Picture 1 (cartoon, helix red, strand yellow):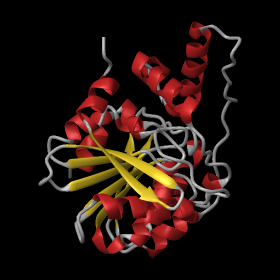
Picture 2 (cartoon, rainbow, N blue to C red; picture 1 turned 90 degrees about the vertical axis):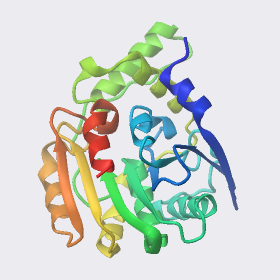
Picture 3 (tube, rainbow, N blue to C red; picture 1 turned 135 degrees about the horizontal axis):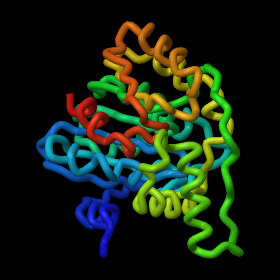
Picture 4 (cartoon, one colour; picture 1 turned 30 degrees about the vertical axis):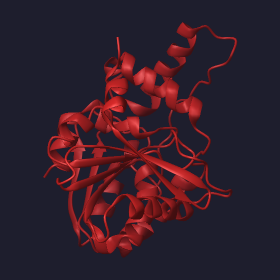
Length: 273
């Protein structure tokens, strides 16, 4: 039986854009006349990080979900990568997808928010709002967590699924009981295809510097149990609330790092405000 992921993929309009290092792929849903909402995903991910959000969002928006460079279906950029180089490719991609001068909102999850911050600087004159979900590169401490496991070729399919379930419970979910078959399927598909790693970028401050320069409305959404912020969640709240153009910092109770998947209704309400 087809999964929600496969159904959404079939329903999408696939858009391929060209840049100096190859092709960047996006998928779109919803009316061409609706306001545009661009979604960027996390590290080791793809457009499918938003699988539980797209159906509701596309009822009111033209949703454009990217596969960022070197992830999903998109070609890898040249090494060394940086938030700035990745952001420039994303901005070039959006400049090709959107009509000249067309306005849009941008929402970036985790690594997608870091890269999105750089794209936002380039396209700021067309950007109506930038929403950040659980991103780092804020020049703030990252909390420690238990080590992740790695699947191996010697493992059975069931053993590999348990590795992915373990890793999702450690890093992505606030409540491991919410890890379903679809989440495990996404984790398996996306991690196998990832050719770019965020590396040390989340430990830097590139997003904080971008936020300080942006003049568009900025919104933040964090899971209460986000594993990367942990006990330092209030530091993130203070950073965003100190921005003169921040319109809100929402903490979603019980949710982890992948807040858009674990609590889609709460995230969708904010993105549709």
